[in-house]
Image 1 (cartoon, each protein chain N blue to C red):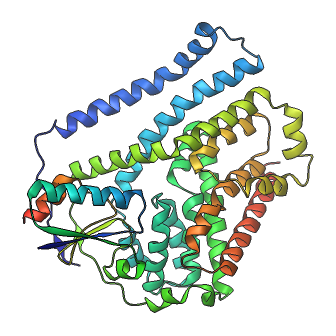
Image 2 (cartoon, one colour):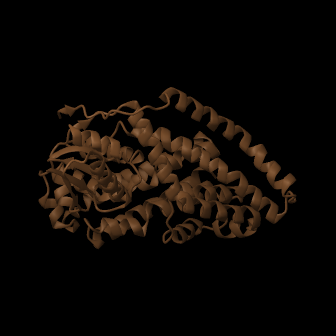
Image 3 (cartoon, helix red, strand yellow):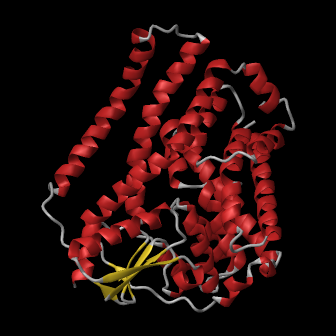
Length: 78
Length: 350
């Protein structure tokens, strides 16, 4: 099961990213759990400074922007 | 930094160059037809009297709203595109390890091109501290970021010409650099929350992500739409107030409060501006109206800077990483800087 982490304090952008991630999961049918990381300590540990960030199975795939469900689906299928 | 090629596949779409070309042409057409159109609308279609209070106020409003919207849509898109090449992660790497003065100047300059989302203020702050960037340098960035932003500069340029825009930028940078140096000297490190220091040296380096031009343009446009939507209320209120000032405010009143004859003009307008907050774009129409009523440039600049640089929402967000004493010092240093700029420019342009 893939582990998707949405990094961000919970503002609008973070929520949109989470929604896109959920849609991507539905699109691909991949088994995945989506976790929201709002603690700054944990967010900074990934090395990003511009939220929202997206981490799939421990690898940072995006930060500072909101990738579309299509983008996320492509990453999930790799 | 290793780079991963994570470029996603894109479906069928209209050729990028065609879309961009059409957009640019549409923008230019709108830009050049806008003034005559709104003039015609106000005075011919609506039949208002030139020179009447109401007529002038409406004319101001109808002229400004499309003009400012067009400027914003065009400028934010272009600037966001450029800024995509300077992510904070790279800025941090550039700032770490520089000397005090060079670092403070660089940080203030980078603040000009920082993004708007105030939720980035905290990760940015923590990120800078993590990388060992001195507190004063970080504050130079925090001061210049809301005050001297690219939207304000471009709007000023578009509405008043390059001179005023450059003056504003120079003034803002000066306040940021001097403010940063002063705060650095005050050695207020102990007023930063402990957990932030605990994170020092812990941050990882993140991979650089490859983006295509299609990605970048798509991102920039999406960001622009969202941002304009968010600042639209401030903008409309700002234009509304500007229209009221333009149409109704007696020149004598503006001169009495903010004019040259009043030696306390600068502190008064700064005091009025302190509790107010607006995105920089929203202040421009007010600035336009005030200048039109004869308020001196220094006083107007001080007013504009005080509205954007000192904001309670931002302080509340910063409270997550800084204690109130340091926030108070931050506010005080910036306020004093703004007062100095106000008097200085009034003096220089006497």
